[in-house]
Length: 82
Image (cartoon, rainbow, N blue to C red; front, side, top):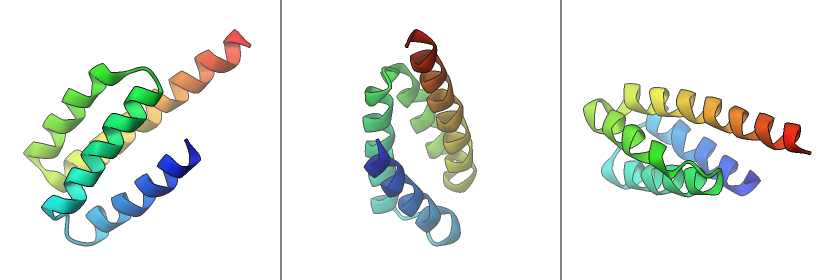
């Protein structure tokens, strides 16, 4: 999960502060799919992909915000199960 987070931070910075070209956006989509599969929420990927299609920069900010909340919820549930 830490490797995924590092890659996500790197690609997100490139997309937000640089040029969100097709290659970076595809890598981000793949990464979102991988992370959501890892936390058991593959259903969220479609919503993220749709937001990225509408406006790349704003969609990415929206996607990152949602991902942050979803990971926090996942970790909270996992900690409480222990």
